[in-house]
Image 1 (tube, rainbow, N blue to C red):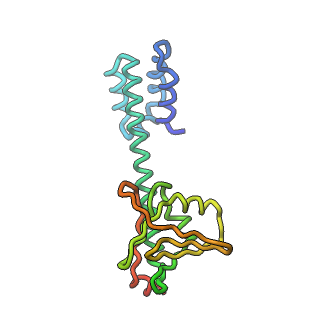
Image 2: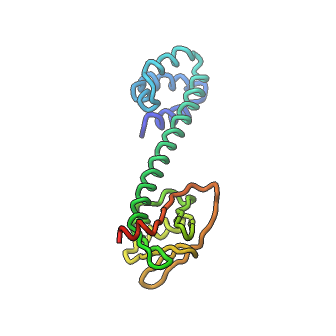
Image 3: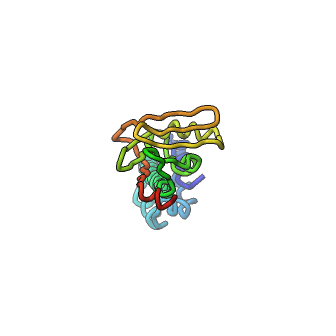
Length: 193
């Protein structure tokens, strides 16, 4: 458990007036770890402890600071995950091959390295069409761990096949959804082939 999570739990457990002094003692004891996780110097935390003499006020301010820092950490992780997924999508798009009006995809690679969040979209863009599908179904499919998956995308949607069946996912829109984009160029596919 990181220092911020531990501090949040200490604050929540000790917010009543009899125990609120425990929060200050905890912060003083763990000042180095807290400074690291907050991304500040130990002096900054020490000065805060000196400036805020009311332990209830200290608890409120520290809880707000913890929530803000945790939100920042989540944003950094989300951005890193999106960058890694987009990089994988770019590599996958460069290896995709055109077969007439459809683009053959390495579906196992897509399922293992491109997905970000269930409510995000994967968008396949070419000069001929743009198809966007929500990742929720792809997450569910990835959990099945099928080894016989193949797939292609065309103007009608993303088509997934396996030995005994398949799925046809039609394009959907949601301007608010996050997205990973596969730019499918006929030239890149011709070079890769």
